[in-house]
Image (tube, one colour):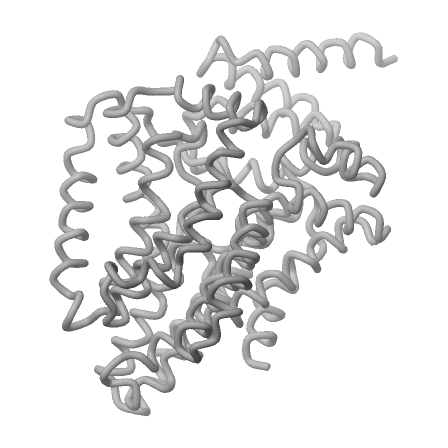
Length: 438
């Protein structure tokens, strides 16, 4: 009940929002998701079939953009509940579990209302992160339940089934077997003995790797990704993106759907991010026995934000939706520490203050998603030197028939990047509209 109320209060104002940016490429203008027959026909010729199935279900319902938003909110609510259940199970395996019974609900409530999750919830295309997280956390919950209750069906069958569903939404779910190992170690187990109950998940990982490496669609994407930078440059760039996302999580006052982050080519260009990352690794090891929830939080975050993107870098160096799966153990660690250090009255005051602040920031951030104009005006204000942001704002102005403002933004985009062909095309389109108008 509390989780549903938190999601409703935080996200009610996003229901009137419109399609944005990539929504047009993957939903509005993508015929594959406009009927069940089209989805089925394209099943062997694309990627992320389960994600597209969810888009097809929404499109065929006939509720328009409202149906997409409602589905995103239901997915988010389900994820908040999974965070609650996983937090309960994690706390139960700690030596001071009796003193921590309030921590799981606080962690789940913070997950439900934290503004860093708006990109995965309010932005319809952010569903790729939230829906994958739904099956990923369900797989982890199934594994933990199977291990604690000694029920092989959950451990050996249900867990890999949810793992397969997560992979069918987004391929970054390949980290799940490592996440299972991390859970075991953080709950007092030994990784050497954890492989036996996990063998079906590791087998599925092997099968998935063979499938990805034999798929022309995935191979072409991986090849394009590998050409973006060298290994050393990837490491430097992703460490910088990692620190940026961590800052956004801790102090989400300058959220940005298209941050202007540098593409680095030498590890020496990322000395500070590298130092911070090494320090976090040290803390993870140091706290493993004394405060395993901190080790679990740091290990989980590092696992989901760095290794994959070093080998296969993203064109967009960092997006807030990357934190949707990565950050929930940080909220659990925060909830546990507050529970240990504060008495009942002070705990309630601090918890209420955090929740109210997060809700206010989330409601405010959702206002930005009301239209493409408001979204890209906000982005340009925060990334004034990024050509793509100016081009997207110019295009939004063009669609809104604000032609002089469109010309201004498209001109700025070309000044920042003369090779940006999208801005040149949009400017030509604007000139043609002005010429043909009476």
